[in-house]
Image (cartoon, rainbow, N blue to C red):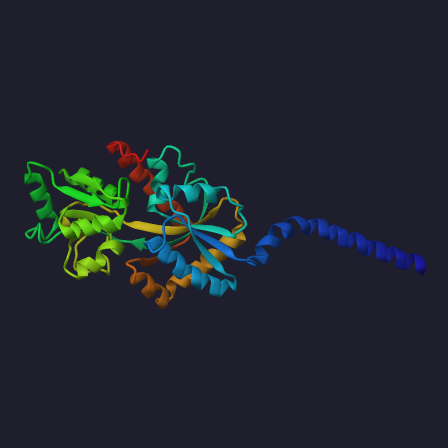
Length: 334
């Protein structure tokens, strides 16, 4: 009796051990993911506070914290078009506790700086696309009263003996690249006067020092609404609800033209897929909330969800497209 009990106990122990060896590898892989999140999450914004990327991070981060029951700490780490932060995040622990918002300047920084230190397609895990920022081509209506659409601007630019000046938020900024693409596609010339940031460029366009600017709507929408600037075209393939009466560049004869700024959520490569999948589901639901959409719209940003595959293809597509233009034009920040 005693020996049979002993034998049964031994068999149960062996069975339990056998079972443990079978489940140990997946269990270990899942344990970190299933417990996630059990501490605060860092959401890095590679730009200064108060810009569009920062606004999105704070709006989405607040809702994410409420849904995940853990603080989401937005951390601003500006510098070199976001490349300083991106290079650090690429090397961070892939545990789901460090995330970054990618926007166009940081995507394109490795094309503009020789030592950016990361490859946006290979060094990050794409999580989800989060927003679009439409771009607008604006003129100072006092300096160019007769320029009410794109073709009038192009005709006037072609008739100048000395090229018109135009401005943007800086060399390699999305406004700069968008205008260079327009000049190349439509065959006219203008002289770029770069500023350090949108605010001084907008101020000088309103003040009349520079007559034309290509800018994201976040920076210029209030001034368009106040009548200080006139929007003559938007850069995206489709019109924007923020300026429904302003035609796209493509609608005004430059077929196939498409330039819109956007942003998405990235994690370091190696972040467990269970965590990434959970983030995708949460982001999708947050961006579908009318309150989130309204808060973003108030900042000139359009909520736009796409899954990891959508973000990956957008990264590859834009890196190729703008990389070609940057090389063609010899644009560099070094």
